[in-house]
Amino acid sequence: MAQFTQKLTTETELFSFDFNPILSVGETLDTAVCTAVTQQGTDPNPSAILDGSPAISLGKASQIVTGGLDDNIYRLIMTVTTSLGYTYTLTGDLPVYAPTSN
Image 1 (cartoon, rainbow, N blue to C red):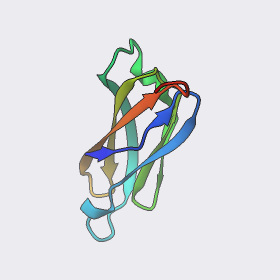
Image 2: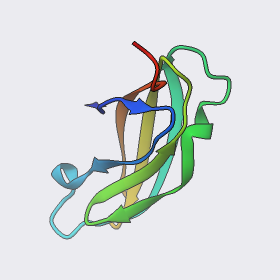
Image 3: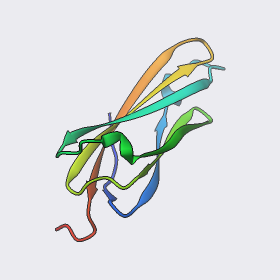
Image 4: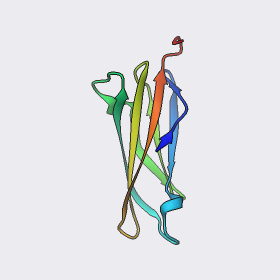
């Protein structure tokens, strides 16, 4: 599991998951789906932090993340399918804080 550096509630950032270490030679990513859940704190709609669909490039799947609620930790779950028909999932925790938080 990845541990992303914190993001402020006012920021929009791109977060990437590198699948290259688990891909076979010549295997590529075909599709990617990202979901978000709350690991710490309360957010009735954690998927609202996801902006658009993931992008795929050179064995990496990337998701734009925006907003979020102060003092929450979100888990991003990236699931991909590959050219060989395999499905892989990587996760990463993302702490979110307001710019005025201590």
